[in-house]
Amino acid sequence: MNTFGERFALTTFGESHGSGIGCVVDGVPAGLKIDTQFIAEELSRRQGGRNIYATARKESDEVEIISGVFEGTSTGAPIGLLVQNSDMKSKDYESIKSIFRPGHADWSYHQKYGIRDYRGGGRSSARESVARVAGGAIAKMLLSEIGVICESGIYAIGEIEAKDLDFTNARTSEIFALDSGVEEKQKALIKKARNAHDSVGGVAIIRARGKDGKMIAGLGEPMYHKLDGAIGGAMMGLNGVKAVEIGAGCAASRMFGSQNNDPMDKNGFLSNHSGGILGGISSGNEIVVKVYFKPTPSIFLEQKTLDMNGENAICALRGRHDPCIAVRGSVVCESMLALVLADMVLLNLGAKMENIKKIYG
Image (cartoon, rainbow, N blue to C red):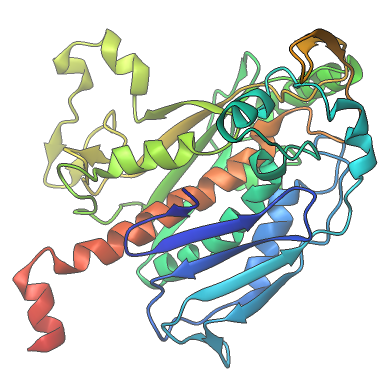
């Protein structure tokens, strides 16, 4: 499946070393102002600032809008977005075209399809996420019209965890660090992994809130399309993500009900262990999601593997890879949350007769 979403749907296409990456965003209401500069800024954030903490592959990532927009405004037709690939070095992958890279999707893709694009992993490459960020930018424009903001940042690199969460710091940090107090230690750990030809995992936090700090209540379909279920599926659908927590997450399993419940008074919730979601529906509290990324599987240490004939082989990689995929992955997760929420906003329009009467009288 290459399509995500019910009413606000994203379909992506393209491969890591193909001619380009693109997406079709369907369900965008007519009349939405489309800010091409904002899309460009989002794609630039995904690139990771062209520093030593990201891959050396440097694409321009200039987006072309090929449908669905007229004079800067959505028409109601599907919006087509295309980003050309220009900085491929496919020859770097010649040495592994007949072997399976440990930790990658090579083996499972071959088992499923009997064929694989060995050039950077083809469709399984994180390069595909450029389409998610482009589509997510459209979703953010829609959410901005109703006062919803999505933010993200790096909580942990390896075992070095943030003590404070400052989303303003994350916007200016080279690694999108939430805590300036541990940022240099986190950077040092990424450098250490890179210098050792290895990689390191990390954790991102993504949140959604209104401009007043609160979130829209009532988003989510209560039984088979719960908001937390959709968020979990969206995040787990990203390459390299191995776990997702909403609110207190796994820690809730170690609590008593009296500790985990979020009391309320006339001013609102007094805590947010639920992560802003109750019964699969947004409660009005901030939505808080923690996403766990595995270490980048592309490392430059020799590893045992199998070749296409089932014989023992050694994998010795070349190429350009992120030493920590969580860093740029945090931006992609932010886009995925925006896509989920935009979809839920449109799905929610028919939840009450009063909503229908506002449109049809």
